Amino acid sequence: MNPMKILIANWKMNPSSGKEAKALFEAESGLGRLKNIEVIICPPACFLSLLGGSKSVKLGGQDLFWENPPAGGGAYTGEVSGKMLKDLGCEYVIVGHSERRNHAGETDEIINAKLKTALKSGLTPILCIGERDGEEMSDVVASQIKKGLADIGKNQLEEVIIAYEPVWAISTSGAGKECSPDNALSAAVFIRKILTEIYGNFLAQKAVVIYGGSVDAGNGPSYIKQSQMAGLLVGGASLEAEEFVKIGEAINNL
Ligand code: PGA
Image (cartoon, rainbow, N blue to C red; front, side, top):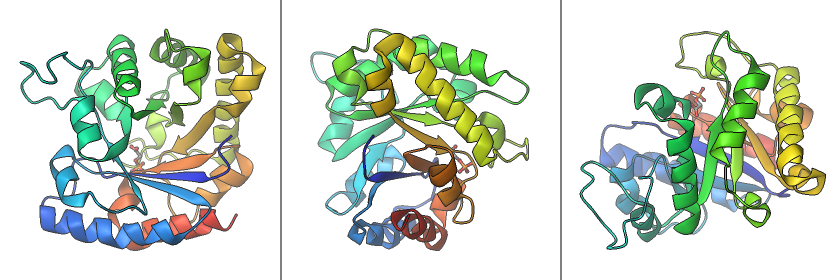
């Protein structure tokens, strides 16, 4: 497992101007001084070129197109390629976020193609998995891992981050539920069980598994201390620089 704890900001479709994006990025980049965390900020793609240049925190995309056309571009209106993200300074990219599964109709097959394209583009994919309210965690997570990581070899697993995000715990999901550290621990253990079936115990134990869903400075550390999570994926609280910095400081000191 990566000894550095991972802290990812998923700004989603926020903020609404480049000026605000720059201010938020600057405030959150201060976390780059901390030695025990790796901070990755995922802004909307349109702000990436405004935010490059900071060496202290990393940049990530929120999505990418499912292939890199050989010519470097192609007739895919509205899409952004892995190559373009890389060129804009990204080192990471989120794939399969539940909002894209739900609103953009992304299937596990599309997500698997995106994950492979991310790796081919030199980006570390952050594969989001998690059940919706009322669904069985084990059924959904097993299927999303197997399909999302289809054809990903043993030597590539360590280049992937797996983010367990129970959809019912995401702050904007409307379910209004919180995922307890015990619940997140059960998911982490189950994820490693499935990874063991595919990749063997050694690689499964080394895999980077993080938690996301209504994380704030109050509950964030508990997912790392009690749930065997290697880091956090933060949505809503990453739009408030002060709260996000508090989360980073809290987990840096664990
Ligand atoms: P949240 O979002 O922290 O606002 O719950 C997490 C996510 O959707 O990645």
